[in-house]
Length: 323
Image (tube, rainbow, N blue to C red; front, side):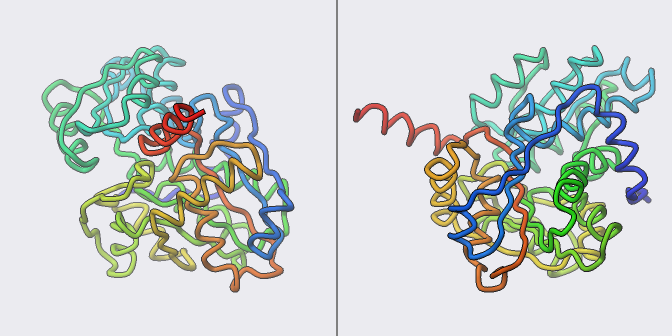
């Protein structure tokens, strides 16, 4: 059985990643606060070197691998940010890295992975199909297979973003976290509930890729098709460890639509001058959706990354072409 990370593990992860990463900002934007009707703070993980929060987990994981595991190399499946995280960390620690992506994966994210020296191959239409293939390759060729959600060290690493939020604003009452495979939101639950059980943590997922939500509701892993454009939180099947943590600690789950999330992307561009990917903008979409519940409270939303999905890239190209 996998060991659930603790706050002590997160504090150790903070010490481990400190030499490699800057602290990301937590900004209060009055226009967004007015929009939601609360005191809203945004954790901008787009300022990480790979443009997303996942790098915290990748560095913490690879820093703790044995010499034998580093010699074998690592492999994982990804739709983008997890792969960039692992590739960046592998570059830091001189470890061979293989990344498996769905056949229709974002080419810009694939290029971003390759820039750190990782090898990229394509298999399957959805992440869960790519992951099963990565596990097969690991078995055949000896790689250390990294499955994001079922890696306690990775969860502890990404949980440092929530630790930073509460260090900067200790009186935060609600934290909204994007949820794909569940590593980020399970880490948020571990930190928030250890510091103050009264802090509420809400997971946010897309209506058209709601595997983690359905799994949380039913108390068991449930596989569903990924049909949302917000690829960063498209995960066909959640991992067991994050699901276990969420079933024990999560306060609520909010589903948002594709159009609501697209509108949130533009709120960020227009009102903060930040490009936030759909997976990261989903938390703002959720805050707007449940603003009556959040009114007059102190709320943090995690904008988990700034690596634009195919839809955002195409719409921006169209806009530039009409200038």
